[in-house]
Image (cartoon, rainbow, N blue to C red; front, side, top):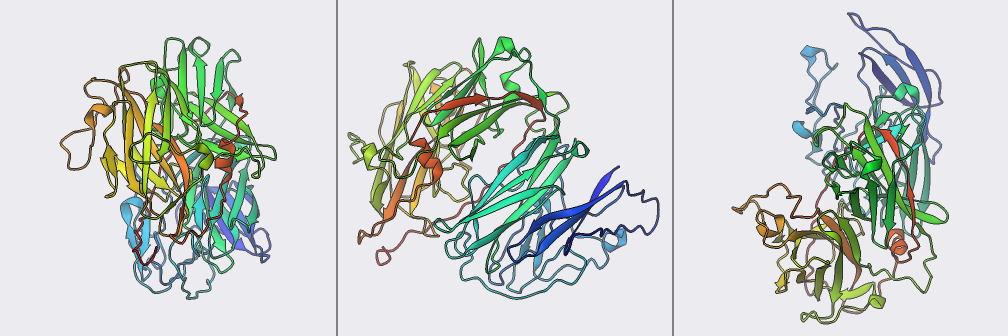
Length: 591
């Protein structure tokens, strides 16, 4: 068995590599390389040596992790098996010669099944992955909330544990963005393969740091699962959470030239249609998008994928003139398998939108209608609007967006579906509020979950089978987020069909109703729709400055250009991690 061994050190790059063998057949060093992988604004240089041999205990994190002494902190260490087997961890055992001292550090606990060592007390602990004495220090942070002094990740930063895909001799790239309201992010540290590169920029106006991480796999990386880890750090040394992703390396081949695809780009969605006759053997039941929860449908002639611009794993990148939203159709053998044993098909697709200056008079953050296409339902449209009052007669004019409301003020929202079919019903499965226009934002507050109301101020109003009307009191998140987006997961069903998600209604842990597998003939896929933003103000009418992010801006201006690429490679499997950041309602004296 071949292993790669890495040593990271902070000094001038030179050939420094140690590999010891106390007994037995330890193999031999087949390959040795070294070079610089990262640097800091202070001039420190991180170097990494990589060896190729038959036994190793790799260290893949060339940086010190700092834990503020007043903030209990959890580190989610990366555990990955290419075959999808369960991986557990435990402390090293001296009788197995797994470690030298095997002492458990004071203040650390290990949640073995999910690789999460947790610091429980308030003593400062220094952790260093290097073989010379680390400098230990104690410090506190004014606030333990990520996003205040400790950087918080922003979209499109990949979640911890995500599995991405790269191809030999083709550039692989991802973006890390982080923000801290009361500190300056001086760098985003990375650890990965030897020839990885990073460019970093800091925007003082938005207090956001952005790193573009780039790597081009070589032939030596073919078939490997390569970990890449990163975190953001402020000038004071405050750090974000540590995240790691896995990049599986395959070989890119071309699909047959006669495969026919077409894309429809709208203000809020993109749909791709694959002509079945040009791609024989493809089955929609064994195809999915970047988010494996999102699958395809088909009719007699085409395979169909229809998604919102901010859902189903859709990523975006930008250049000087446009923003490009990208997703990919991928085949798989079995839903729970990470690695496929067959030749896999990839069909990337994208929609490009021109950048237009933020000062343009035509800008409107109001979301247009969501148009989807799906087998058995044809083309149907979701409308998501805010209303003036509880009679739901007048929508808030799109020209008034973003909407400014006071804390505690009632908000009235309506979702409806428009379809040429007259026997359908609408079901709103989930609704949540987020400070960014991203349904996968790690900071969120649940309003409706599995059809059940979670917020105690939420009121469901009577409506017909193609409408859903509800209201709730306006609120703000801890961390002083001033803007809120509403994102909902919606489903369309054939009316009166038994066993559909629409017919089940509220399903929770105490419910006697059990969720069933989706009925392909009588139930649509889950679709994500959103509306906003809402800007929350104090009762003294202090104005909140408008600073919409680029994602919202681009949705206000549409002149879509569709780009479709076709390749063959390895399947992507995306692991979703999320956390809930709770909010508290303010008392009257605080408003």
